[in-house]
Length: 383
Image 1 (cartoon, rainbow, N blue to C red):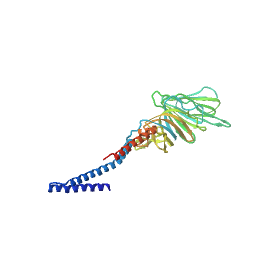
Image 2: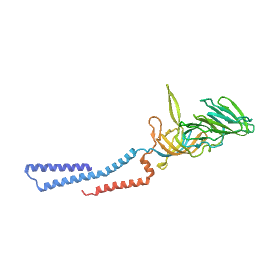
Image 3: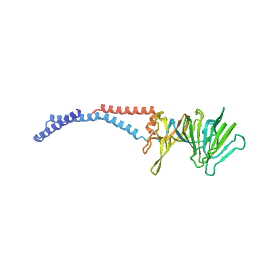
Image 4: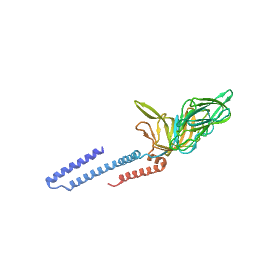
């Protein structure tokens, strides 16, 4: 409506100007009243045009401000590293030890223990005599299983002890079967890596099984130990826990290169392809720098990192799954598989808002107040 009236006013000005111009050409002069009329119309048209521009400016300012905010949010670069907490239930987890530390508490009671990747085994004999020493051939490896059995009212026992790891030890923990059966794989990520000897403590009737097919049954009246010497390539343990497993692993394990997936091999024609498969069953990812903003993780959701370092606050074997609590710093965190995984790294604006929410709010209020003051000055300024 206003634009229509402005156009009518301009048409009136042009019409009157044309009439007076024609009269000036024909008569050679115009009256003072006609000239004043044209000046008043011209001034009125200019006032109307200026007012229309000023009416549009507040909207332009608001749109410009919204555009700036959107541009900052969209174009703000993602941070290189962010602090996170993980609270997960998994079927498998891997990590690299970042320092020398005890991996398993002493005297973890088991129903059975299987160990492979051994250079030497020193097994005691129940009827005295020398220790039975089994040594792997050059370049080969040995394996052994221990099972606690019962003989009437006499019940055997097997417990794992003395399992410590050095820096750069890759640890893979996996649920492998029915209730309380797990696999622990240990190998190195550096050329000079080695794994220290460890042992199993045994008492009472125990069944020995060897990788060459040999079997022995012993009944130990006093506690004895089986000593294991791993190969330089690493070793694997399969453990069947006797009871609840809350205290198998110590708290606060120093860890890096956390992996929440397994590598599955698929064959396609003549090619063999490796595919990452998430081992997450459920859990939550917390962004510490965003005021502990929580992101629920779906079953099977693939989460990967280019780098990840921190502390495993707790690692529990519960039933047929693994419960993990981790605190640390992640780089290149993504979700999804295929050629286009989606980044989960927050951008700088989100981190700024999380760390300095009050200051950012104050800055926004000041900026908005300045915009409003500018608009009001435009309205009040004389024409």
